[in-house]
Length: 206
Ligand SMILES: [Zn+2]
Figure 1 (cartoon, rainbow, N blue to C red):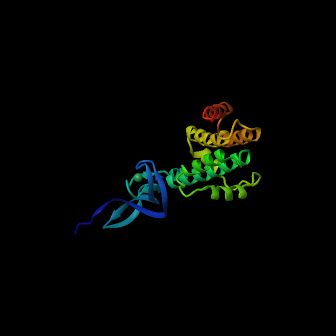
Figure 2: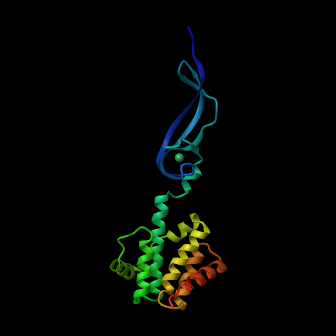
Figure 3: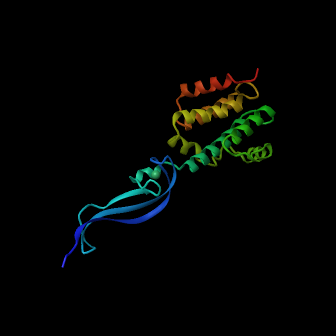
């Protein structure tokens, strides 16, 4: 009788979900599991011959990653955060000055629409402004973005708010305060923020 012996990898799936796969460069399903190599005898696992190793496996490219890969937000989540942050910055910029200026309001609506929210209108902006309370921080989108967005992306976000602020004329003190706070929360340095504000002011209508 021939008894077949060998070593085989056995993987137990513990969890699944969606993640941003660095290999595929997109949002993919994953399975998190623990794999271990076993000594096999006649098709039966007898004893482990390696340590148990946890990994996140992409459902598309089948590559295994360390669990830390799950910390990176999915593209869908990042898009949502950018939209939330832009919407909240647009409201903050208007509340700081220019709430009744058609040019500033149009700039705010355009900025939010640019994030893919095509249905955003002046009426929705009105509702956002009524709901806006500077003392009540409704979302942590800026903090979350600061952790995951490149400095260029953070600067771009401040630039969007700055252009809304200058759409109706030079920066007011309250607008500058608001932009500095946003820039700080996004992890930008003071010179970086100043550069963004100067550049946005260059787009100011004469
Ligand atoms: Zn992949």
